[in-house]
Length: 216
Image (tube, rainbow, N blue to C red; front, side, top):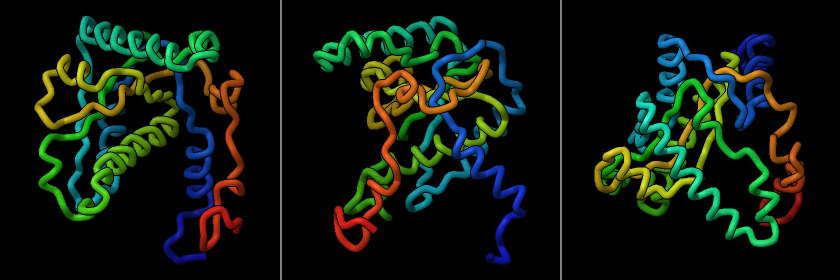
């Protein structure tokens, strides 16, 4: 055991938050206290980023009409996604895919403009800006779970339309609509698994050694 390890109780709490994190769709309204929201966003801001570029930007949506407009964009894309799914269209339309109207707090996570100026770590992998933002969202997700709040990542929207709605500068890009707030209960397993949409694969199927598809 490393001398830098947390205590057994602290380690257990970290692994519990990871195991019990869920992509939530059902919220009970309510509110998130300002000091708690600040703590969660600070956790997101502690994420690693390639070249320390910190490409994340968070927009808190407090205007009711704007929230409703975002819901409209999500609904439009939900219908388009159903059409693209063909024979699974009806099955998809029965799923609850967002909680935009129901959650206590609505956030939009976006990539900043001017990212092309950041070359460190991105010359051959420019998508590392997106990876950095994803790390920030995961930090927020895990911190929210530890605080007893649900968070849902919604990606059903036209990014150009959402950028226009939020007056975002050219070159920036919205990546996630984040629904945050109290929930009645956390799903015992991923919701899509419970609904029979898909089943998670075991780690053994996804872990290789030395070469692709050579099982460890």
